[in-house]
Length: 156
Image (tube, rainbow, N blue to C red):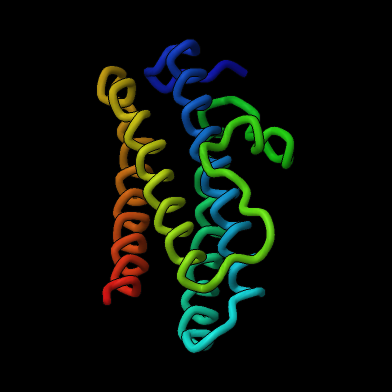
C-alpha cells in the first residue's frame, strides 16, 4: 500500500538516507561506548564504568527509535556492520585507549552524532516533517548534554 503522509517519496527517501547515517553513527557510538565500558581501567574506573553503561543503554534505545522512523517513512533501516561502516562518520578505535582518551573519543562521537542530526534539518523544514524534526531535536539535546558531561571530566 502506498504511503500518503504529505511528504513525497523522493523527499521521504532523502530523509531516510539522512536517518540511516544517523543510525550508523548512533550504533557506532553505542559499540564504542560499550567497548570502553568493558575495558576502562584506572583511578576513574568506577565512575566511568557506570557512566558508560548509562550511555550505552540510552544509545541502545535510540537506535530503535531512529530505525523505526526510517521504517515509518517507508524504507528499510540499515542493520549490518558493513552498512554502518560505510554510513558512519565515527571511526573505529583500535586497541584499548587510556581512560582519558576514551572520554575524548566519546565526546567526539557524541558531537559527530549531533552534526549528522543537524545536517538533516534543512530538508525537514522544507517538507514540514515535524515527527522527524522532533526526534532529531530530542536526540541532539541528549548528545549535547552527554558531550558536556564527558568534557567536564577532562577539566584540570
